[in-house]
Amino acid sequence: MAPDEHGHEHAHDHAHEGGSELSQVQLRVRALETVLTEKGYIDPAAIDRIVEAYETKIGPHRGAQIVAKAWSDPAFKQKLIADATAAVNATSDLTHVSDHLIAVENTPRRHNMVVCTLCSCYPWEVLGLPPVWYKSSAYRARSVIDPRGVLHDFGVSLPDETEIRVWDSTAETRFIVIPMRPAGTEGWSEEKLAQLVTRDSMVGTGQPKHAEEIGA
Amino acid sequence: MNGVHDMGGMHGFGPVMPEKNEPVFHAAWEGRVFAMQRATFFIGLWNIDMARASVEKLPPDIYLGVSYYEKWERGLENRIVSYGLAGADELAAGHSQRPGKAVPRKLLAADVEKSLQRGSYARPTNQPAQFKAGDRVRAKIINPETHTRLPRYARGRTGVVEAIRGCHVFPDSVVTGKGENPQWLYTVVFDGRELWGAEADPALKVSIEAFEPYLEHA
Image 1 (tube, rainbow over the protein chains, first blue to last red):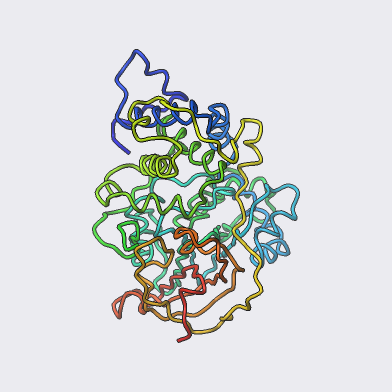
Image 2 (image 1 turned 90 degrees about the vertical axis):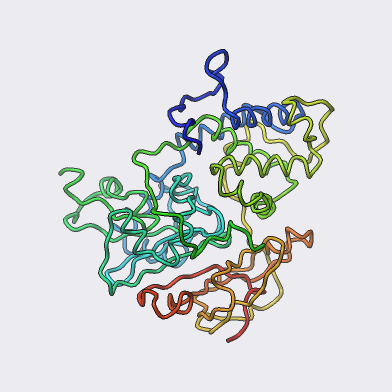
């Protein structure tokens, strides 16, 4: 993104009218939306609702609930690894997901990382929209050749002998990593466990929080 | 297409820089572009593969030089013009100059909730899968000028089929107007040294999701 776009995070760019100048890209986007609306192809109210859904409802808390359930319930975890879409959809307290969600489990021997080298495929339904780094050239280029270097950028280091398995999302399958359950969380509720599950830990570039980080 | 979008294994892009407390959208226009992309899929004239193809066709300096949602915006402009939904003159003017075309569908606010669910790309088939888990396979050396989902770094490399993921819409066909032409999809895993040579991390494994036409027995 252009540096001059930072800090302009209010909900509607109309606030700029009569004020500071609109950037080139803002003008293009406004022109496109105006033409599509005038031609009758899109409904601006639908555009508002889509933005709102991704800003307020669809996010990594959904994936965190899935991971917390997997940590708490071994039978669910088994089903999740066998067929994540079916396992999640059979569970009423989890959000519905569409076809081809695949859950991959971290173990002491294997660490999983997810990338899309060709574009930016990401499990929106369970993690929300991807962060800028996930879509960056640096991440897309390096993950498959130097995942340890990428993990280093995130402050994560793993033993040399730990297998690093990188999943390149080159089709319409989507991946969520089940990180290892942190120590000292025995007997925790799913709700409390979910607070440990970070977005990055479900992409494989981070670890869950430590038990102490969220208090007793 | 051997474009700059096919980035796996490239050097020189520097470190990955995570942003603390990153917002979903960094500016209001990003949200508008994202949502217009969703709403225009709903019209039903193109699918995800065609949308990707139109972004990949951006000139390399634009692809690398503009932000993520600006690429989407430019790709969407290209589709709008190439499908005859609006003229480049109208986009430049910022207003419609002629009546719109009749389109199959329009996403209304009341239908947004159900439209947020991802469509399925699985399709039925009568053809048996040619490979099974455990088979050694080689990714073919192909260099189509059109959209493909076989990354360059895997072409010509030998790996192992780990799982069959069902039969799916074949992107390479869709984008060339040959229809969905569903194909079996496999997770194929490669040893890091097979992809990157003897100096590669011996504990690295990389998998791709490979459509059957990309593969041959090894």
